[in-house]
Structures are given as structure tokens and as C-alpha cells.
Image: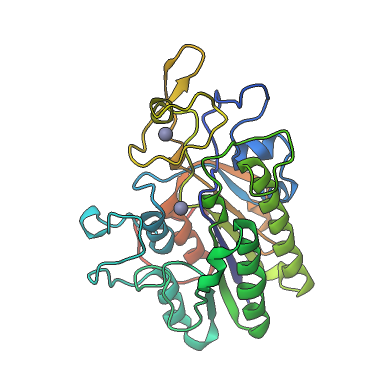
Length: 328
Ligand SMILES: [Zn+2]
Ligand SMILES: [Zn+2]
């Protein structure tokens, strides 16, 4: 059978405007493309080098978790007037369309077990008629990295082991990266893995290794596709951050709208006139043992956040209409 492991990492920047570097280093702000090219995240790199990688994936709509998870659950930019406009997890009763997960479950019925920790659980998002693992409230008290580990180890893995022959779509949503904010992108001194975006990227790279090992240990690797995506990136070194008083590129500024900010030149004290759009720069990696040889080591220059779901739909042969298009 074919299986998809779909991992959403909140606020994982997929790429960055190339001219931006952390002062005093050769490092870009922590992001997948930049860190992959510098050899800092070997486990991500392993998936990228043996997968189909979108170098620049974009969120062209709202860069808010709740909105972007909608795009990652449905493959469509929901119409603005039906989208709840705040970052709280509260949803309009009107949003009753079927998200992809529910469509996949209904298409295959009992032949496919769909597992999700996806937040939110409502219809039109990651709702499935069966297994949904809500993160227990006390997880919120954990440090972000321990919380991410717990989601993967305590919620997702055991359920996959409970349905070894039928799990076909396993989804983990981890939000720790979104909590690593108002902090440096990079620190030289040890700061703990939750202390900067840099150390958190290295932690996430280790979590990727753990997931790959888990799939291999259970003999699922050869039939599994791994999809890694993010809802949005983050702001750093931009005009809005500078206006708020930030004095350096090495500071993650989790500012609200506008999403289309520009790169700030800290030496000259003015906008560099280049779009920054840190929050629009999402991650999209397709890899795994099941991926056909013709896609391996290939890259796609650009795609969008709404292209993730139609790609998964094609991999699982689920008929599903949406706005995005498969990258295959
Ligand atoms: Zn988010
Ligand atoms: Zn900004």
C-alpha cells in the first residue's frame, strides 16, 4: 500500500531573501533552504537530496496560523469573507466544506486509517470521522521542544503502530517553532535548544531523523511518502521590525500585518527597497522511500502552499477538487 506521512511545522521558514545575513556571520536567518545549502541540517538535506524539493514555496494569502492551516488542509485559499480573521481557534459555523482528510477517509472508508494531531479539528480543516489526537492541555506547559517531541512520540507513533496495516495518512502538526520568537535567529553561546531559531532548527533536524528511523524500523519506509510543509515563515530584518525599534538583523520579530514588508538596511538606516516577505516563505518538501526514482533529487523553483494537498491527493489516488495543483 501507499502511505503518506504529512508533517506540518509551524513557522518553519522555507527560504529567505538571499541578501539578508545575520551580522557578523555568513549565516542566513534560520530557514530550510539556507541551512540546507550550508550543510547545517543533514536530515532535512537527506530528504531534499532524495526527494522533490520546492526551493521557494509561498503563502500568497494570509500569514496567520489559522488561515494557513486551512490552505494546508484544503488546497485552496478560502474566500476572505468566510475566514475568521483572528488568531484564536474559533471558527465560523458556515465553514462546513470537506477538507482533504475527510475526503480521503470517505473515499477509502475502512481501507484507510487517517491519523491527525492537526489543530484545528473542525470540518473544513483536518477533521476526520475517526482518529484525531487533540494535544492535551497540559502539553502547553511544556517547553516547545518537549511538546513537539511528545506529539510525535506519544500521539502519532503509537497510533501508527496500532494500525500497522491500514494507516495510510498520518499527520503530525508541531508548533514549537512558532513559540521560538522575539529571540535571536542565531547565538554563538549555548542557549538551549529553545533559545534561538538556529538551535531549534537543529533540534527539528534531529526530530526528522527520528521520524525516518521510526518508519524504517517498522518496515514502512519503502511504501511511505514524507511531506513536510509549513504554514508561514517569520519576520526578521524587515522595515516593520526596524520601525518597532529593532536594531539588528539578528532578532525574530513576530509582527502582525503587513505581511509584505521590505528588507531593512541597518547600516544606512533605511529600507533596502527589496521585498522581505519573511512570513510568506513556506516549506514544501516531498520525499520518502516510496517516491519514484524520476522525482528524486529534483527541484521545483516555485510553488504555493495550496499545492501541498493536491500533491498528496495524487499520491494517494484520492479524487479531490481544490484551487492548488499537484507538483508531480
Ligand atoms: Zn503558524
Ligand atoms: Zn516583517
